[in-house]
Amino acid sequence: MSTATASPDLSPAAVAPYSDEVIARRIGACPKLASLQSVNRALGELVRSDASLNSQIAAVIRRDPSLSARLLRMVNSVYFGLSTRINNIEEAVFFLGLRQIRELSMATPVIEEMQQLQQNVPFVLPWKELWNHSIGTAILTREILAATTLHIDDDTDYLVGLLHNVGKVVMAHAFPEELRQLVEMPAQNPADFARLERELIGWDHARIGADYLRRHHLSEEIVNAVTYHNEPDRAPRHRLFAAAVQVADHLVRHKGITGGFEKVDPIEEDAWINLPGWRILYAADGPESMLARASIANSLQRLPSMLQGLL
Image (cartoon, rainbow, N blue to C red; front, side, top):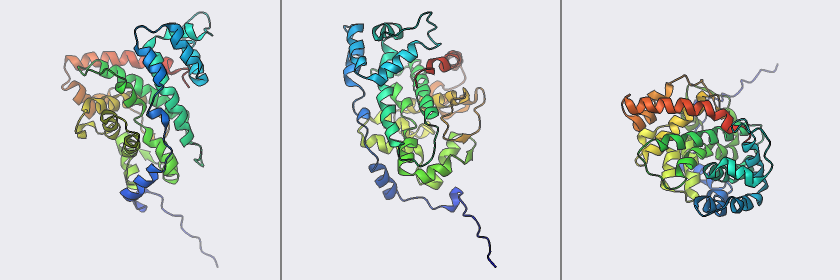
């Protein structure tokens, strides 16, 4: 008479995590992304120059069919509310403005190359939701930091938000089976989900992503922000970047743009004011905090229409 075998326990505690050496080796085996080292340099130089003409910027954009398509989708989205459809790149540049052109030029090559890392994943993952969440977090991180005293003369404020979840993309390539289990595990909040990742793999997506970005020689500010975006109070330096990403991440989740990789409880209204990141940014609940809350409410209202058509 045959006896039924018990199915294996797939909870994190039942699986021993990998050693640091194995994790580092698997991350090192992931393909390198050229876009992380030169994010559309030709276009970036043009949009930073006051002397550049819309026609020059449009000429560079036309060389990239994917960027051109995203540009036209964005300018024709509900957010701009134009009465006639725009089909001309030069007109689109005029309506969007240099800041949004620069953001698009950074996000497009990064997302397209990251999509290459997902090709060998043997199961379906909600990639579009992840990209929407990443871009939404980038937009809000930039807006949050713009209201602080931090002086930023490059695009670090946007990139830290865009890349904060790159570790999840790397996990899909380096630890596909573990990620398959993780996406089915419920968690109370992002920090709790990171704990599940550490128990199952050994490192969480923040540490994995930071290691991957460090191998691409990205700046210390970006690497630190990605490392500590779930616990900015532990960041040894550049805490404002990590704090802004944590707050932006929760705000975007509250709006229902969750990223899709985690079964995390919904973020309640104003839950972000209890985060370490909020306290780092605004200290006590005084005038600065009240102004920030008003500004954030306005940004959140606009976010879905800003994201429409980008992907």
